[in-house]
Length: 175
Image (cartoon, rainbow, N blue to C red; front, side):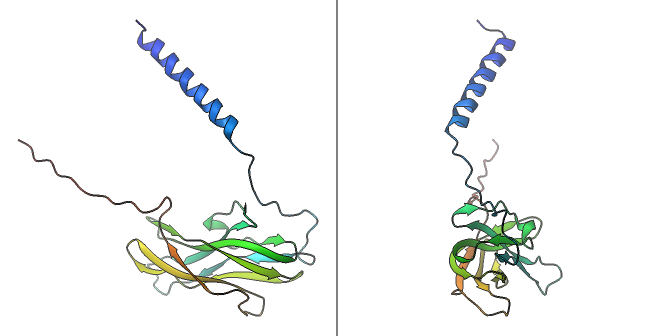
């Protein structure tokens, strides 16, 4: 019979073995790497935006770039104003609005193709997230420097990370 200390060793060993097996299965990261030779003159600049909420007690909607050509940008909703350079040409961008009021976080993403020219700046745009409780809706698109829309306006539904959760309270009476 193992002592309490012996069981700790067994549990630790099982956890360590499981971690090593899972680490061996992890694929290499698929992150977007901005080409080092690109400059704002030779590449196209992509930047997010923020839609100001007229209600001073409600949060603003931030538009964040998530992927370029199916490669993660590693940007969070704090990075909405961080410019990213891409090579000129057609690219597949996944981006969307994020709405965070300090207690709840909602995000929704869509994928749009855009044709980007060297030396120009493009803005990821959105309507303000509107909704009630767990259903928030917005529309996203890409604009060029003049404010002209270069992609179709696409509706996006925002939701909490990991999907929706339904909570059903269960009351058990005491005897």
